[in-house]
Image (cartoon, rainbow, N blue to C red; front, side, top):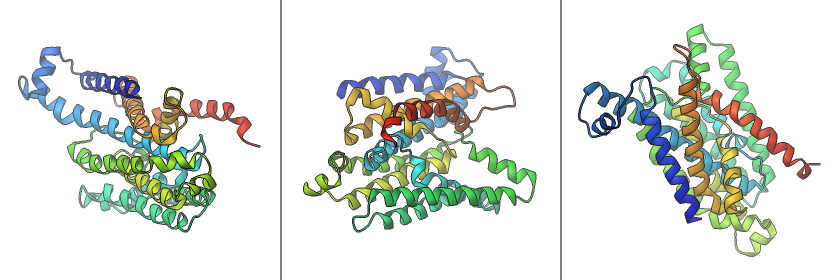
Length: 328
């Protein structure tokens, strides 16, 4: 496991460097190192520190949260096709942000949009935690998440349908497509402690997730509470996914793909997959953002959520095909 993590950390560092070098303004190695040290051309220092660095670190951070959440959810739900979006937290966070955009509340303060997204995610988490009480079955959590997701998507579509003008509609639509472009250290400072805390919460539940992989009855005989584990998973997913949606919009498929890419090297124990899946998620989302930047044309940016969907949908179909024997 240490060797796999070392390789993933190395790959992430390399991608971070390439991401910082990627852009319309060319940097020589000497200019890049000088800019990192706040020396040399002031314009290039500004580009590195105020434009590229927050975007790069935020992409890696959001991807890490999605990857860790995906691994925990697939372990808890014992479903290899589970994704952070399945429990409704992502859609509910999106609804909270859309409400702030629709009513113009986001113009009041830079804290309103991420705060509204976290409020929406928190409300969904409260409902899911209530379902996870008193030894509720995993099926109850899944069905509750599907219902929340459907309701949030429907309400989001309703607000878009009732949008008072084309500009408000376009603002909502562009935000929902997901992006880390034009983000600053404010968004990074907002999301970093929440996502890292969420990964920590999910890691606390790793031993219980390993026990639950043997079945609820076997886990109960080992003193593992399915309800408590569910609450840890929901809380960790709230922190990781809710804060990610709050600063980057809706981004899918990273949480689905990351655990599957880790599993061939680390086995099927869900607890052991959380940290490696976080690293893989960071690599995947940062790579997707770099691809979006390369493919974007002048005045026609390719949004990050669109990029991950275009890459992730075929992967999801492949998983459904390979897992078809698991379904009646």
